[in-house]
Image (cartoon, rainbow, N blue to C red):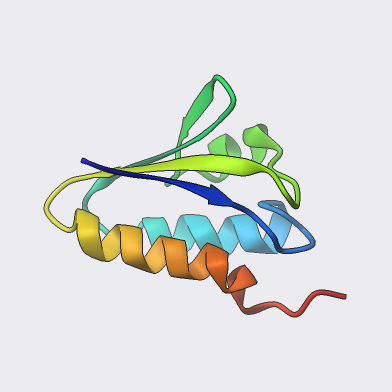
Length: 90
């Protein structure tokens, strides 16, 4: 299992379009993927779960990936977050 703490720095956090893009990307992998914020842990392949976390700009999340393609999944999801979901800040 791989884990990584990441600070979400895009303006919208993990809401609406970024959340949808994150979930779509997570679903491309067979690994189990979870996101935690504080004491709440959700399945990263569930849009409702991700939205429940209410991750805002500047929030730190814990990304957990476990499975056959865990490294590729971690690299891709980390890159997505670090590159602000390809969306310019307004």
